[in-house]
Length: 217
Image (cartoon, rainbow, N blue to C red; front, top):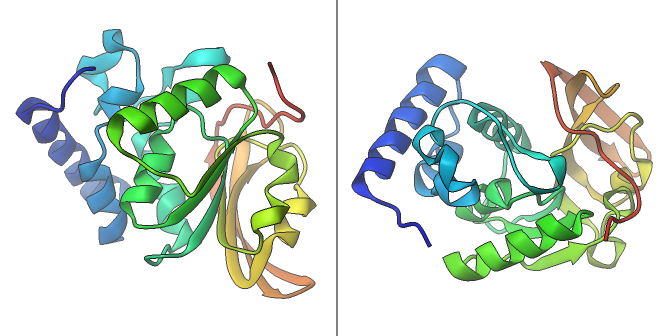
């Protein structure tokens, strides 16, 4: 496996400075996690030299690893505190998962693409990363067995709001999710203010891979 060199660490520091000064990320927990997690280990080696640029790259199953700025922004919107239970919908290659773990969250993660599920599981083992639970399944269904969750993060664009996920959120909990058609979504944060009431905030346009139902063997 490729190693994490001084060059990589230096590039991460430059990325973190960019996230702080250009993107406006102010949560030091997020910035510290972004500085800690070796993004180059989650992508193909041909992209390694560009791993710490603010770019998305193709990964298995015709999916992408999100821009570092998107990972940082979604992570910041969650307002994670150490030890909180976080449900992640869309494990992907595992980079966002690793950032959440570096933020000391207890991460429960779901992936519907078998290639990505297998890749991320192997990657976590290699890197000594330990989500509380990793599932191959339908993200729309969430993980009701482990609910309620303090926070939920959806890393793919949903055309409709998955209400089943809102049910799995604690009162006072937050869900960050991109909603909209496949070409462009709007990033929202839902805060559960009572068992049946939610506060909705909007954070601008993004482009995510679509959220898909069922599982792909």
